[in-house]
Image (cartoon, rainbow, N blue to C red; front, side, top):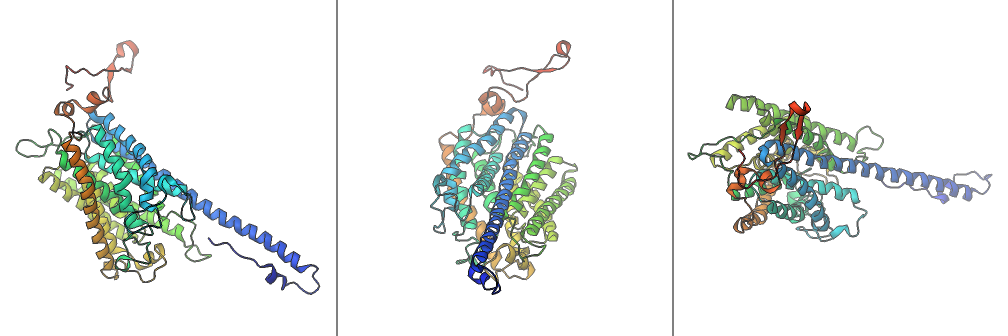
Length: 498
């Protein structure tokens, strides 16, 4: 918000000839006026910063959602392991994103490939962003790492988690976010001086940048590791290895749903921006619309999955519905700010079909992902990128991405095919970049025997063999204490828990 100006000389000319010391009076009035104007500017910055901080807190709360979802989706014998990996995604990601990741992502001025300033937050804050912006982007980075951890759950060595998480949040993800979100990025919609196909890529909150990156990284990890023991029988038929707690899955899903209201609407980074001065309609309206499109896409995907899986399997499966809901959210994330609410319903419907189809393909090729993370985030994320290029409206594109009149918009909305071309390139370069970075990393860890645990450890469960005991250990002593008491159980190398 620009500060309003007041000129004492101009103001003094409006005083009548009988006014005593008109110049001093004009100077006093302008001084007070400037002080009030400065307060308005300060308030605008404070409101926007508070909005961004609150959004960052919401996105960070998604880590708890990931943890609960992961814990419920694995077997009880691996609960502590998967919970610890979620904690370390945030902790290791925080340090490496601070040291390197933020600079690689937003360290401008720089080239179109990678940032080169603000290592260790040197010279932050700037006129472009404050510390709150770093916190918000860090929460996004660790979300990408959390996606990958779900794909390789129940069979991965602890050191592999540390290595891949640090590399993903410190280098792989930041480079992609620089391409599409930095003002200097070669495909960024904010790089108005050099827009790809005249439009740049409209990936507003990261269907490609976050979800595809995390999902494809998980795809390579799970492919190189191979399926869990018992996931497929000798004839190749898929055997369901059910997670131990549907309650935790539902809890995690609702926490992720709640956090998505910081993920998508928060990506505006500012809320106090009027489109027309003195009007009820401004960026706060776009924030509300984004929350609505996010909600509708998730709800539609959940219901489509519910009935789709009922037709295919004959069951009303709550875990499948939760995954379908999240698939709808992952898909709408790219276009949530530039599409109409009715289009979000289309997005969610197709996202559910994409997820169901990807899961069927995964079973056919004997691909094992305990949380369906690669299918959900990779497949539905790719659909979200395409969806945006088809349904983005001209009005919303120009409001959300000002500064370049006449931008291309959705193909189905009459905007031509240039935005779709840019988005297809985004899908290809993300697949290529993650393939040449995370693929060799997982393969190298595999060759050094640092990726997969031993068969004995996998059968016994990592909680017992790597973390000192199971997450759930109860001894019923109701005859003594009229209740349930917990006790510590030490690992016994001579026995294998059933």
